[in-house]
Length: 350
Image (cartoon, rainbow, N blue to C red):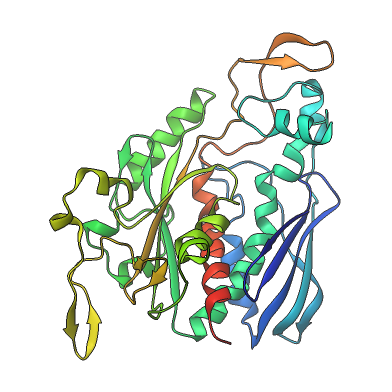
């Protein structure tokens, strides 16, 4: 079980990849009515859809509401579970005691003494399903308050597509695409296909844009909005980097280039640029909040890799079978949006 505590909302994710069920508990949720169809559409984005980038493990992910849900109304203490119905632990039988490179397997062994690495256990991306369920609920709450959250793939491997600072309007963000990028989708898919065909995987970058956030959310230092969003985004497996606004590109800029000038526009304070990504001093400034999340390539690949046998205490090699994503970032987009939704909802005055 893993727990995150905010100012008002606390979240617990529990279960394992191959356990009977996984789930989420939360407290401090605002009371409001959800649209079940919209929620299902959102959570379905995380499902394996048969694309070249996704695993062949197919789960229905139908939530069973235990607490805090009454005839479409959410509020207070909440709990829901999702049954695991398509488990194949036998795929991992040859990996017993042999930690997969760059997975949490070895660290789990050091921490818990676990030698069975079936499905990644509690560290698996499977646990994003309950996170996305809660995030989809809170995303609807924020929508009712005028806040909209979007994400898309801006880079796969060496293929860089359109990103926020290339000029993206909200109508473009709303469009539904077979592959969730704003440009160069065919090239990105080809990059994933080439990696998969070679028994490999490929990394990617996800862009997230949060519109309609009022100025004044967040605080300084440890309570900064960037810190809160990042803490939740890093809970999404395979995320290895988060940057806000121009991020690491600031290192190449002068202050005169990087600064966002203020002006009055129709009586409101705003900037013609948004290099800071909508946050100054840990507090939202009323502009779009923009950030990127970098995903490492999926560690489970069908190539021979070096590892150790923790039982025999010797070096060995493994080839990982089973069902895995060739580019985990694509199905992780709703998890990124969910992380952002939980962070922003926790800052809102209910």
